[in-house]
Image (tube, rainbow, N blue to C red; front, side, top):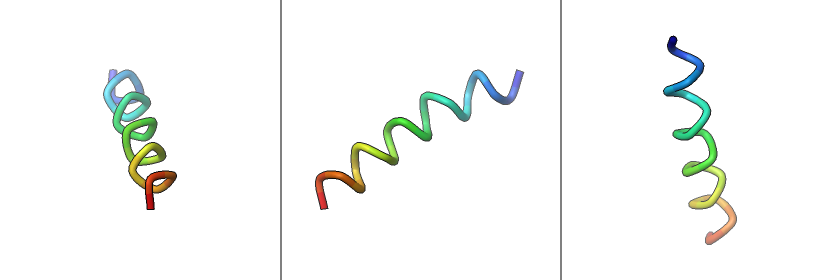
Length: 20
């Protein structure tokens, strides 16, 4: 499923935003 792939990617993007 696509959601299973997007969920972990979204969490990684959030971590990158929090670092900035």
